[in-house]
Image 1: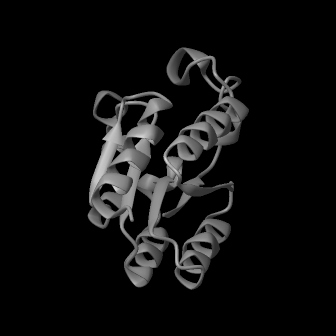
Image 2: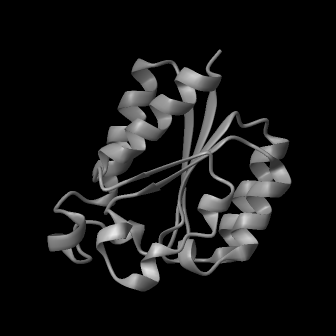
Amino acid sequence: MKILVINGPNVNLLGIREPDVYGQRNYSDLKEMILKYAFTKNIEVEIKHSNSEGDIIDYIQKAYFEKVDGIVINPAAYTHTSIAILDALKSVNIPTVEVHITDLDKREDFRKRSYVSLYAEKVIQGESLEGYISAIRYLKEKYGN
């Protein structure tokens, strides 16, 4: 099984950005945790980050041509603004799980609307970094080969 993990704006600043909200662990910790879990489950995983909406769309489109089986995406602030990311996901029709480190329902009102969730078959939020593992596990259990 091949899974693409995409992280949007400022996720690379984990451990620096609002540690009282996002925790003390950094982006390297997140990547290491994902890679270790994937290895134990015989999952090929690629992890991407960009602060640019266009790059994220390019990652999604490339996933189609690389025969990716599932996408785990934390679109970060683009969650609430990007119809273009939604359209890219709909275009490639790859099973997708949306992940958020925090529980958006308990945050500012503007964070409660997600365009990506209009496509994602599952949304995992408020599980800290472990939400990524939950998302990968879900895809493996549902679509794994």
